[in-house]
Length: 166
Image 1 (spheres, helix red, strand yellow):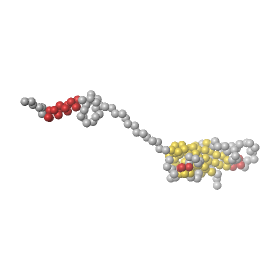
Image 2 (cartoon, rainbow, N blue to C red):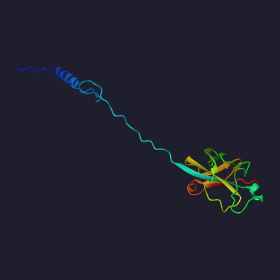
Image 3 (cartoon, rainbow, N blue to C red):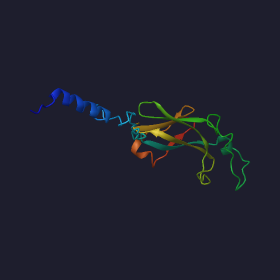
Image 4 (spheres, one colour):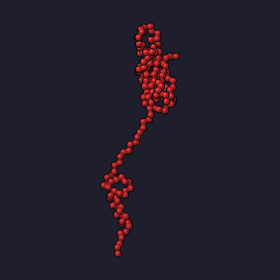
């Protein structure tokens, strides 16, 4: 008579074979030689929030030059002393609709041709990496403020400040 091994001995033998071959541990993360398997790090794509570049200008009438008879034809006016409030290197702030400052930039002499505007002095500022979502923006310098410009228009419309005393 042929005797069969008991089922529990067969199951135990299969379990030992599976364990030694790396199978059956349920995790699937070990190799047959029991060395932990390595996994590749996953990279999560991050998207930078959208930003804007906003251009602003401030202009004043050079009163010293306006009332001076010293200007000869073709002579250019000097904006260095045109205003006691606004001057090169002064910081201009950019505010969103809630009044939060979302950018600060130094003003520098404009690169725009101002020859047709006698006795006008102008400076420019460029605000980069301005967060979107501000609805509209205003520029402010030395107590003077621009009219608000809608967010959808700031890419094509410069914020302009008239810094002439009332």
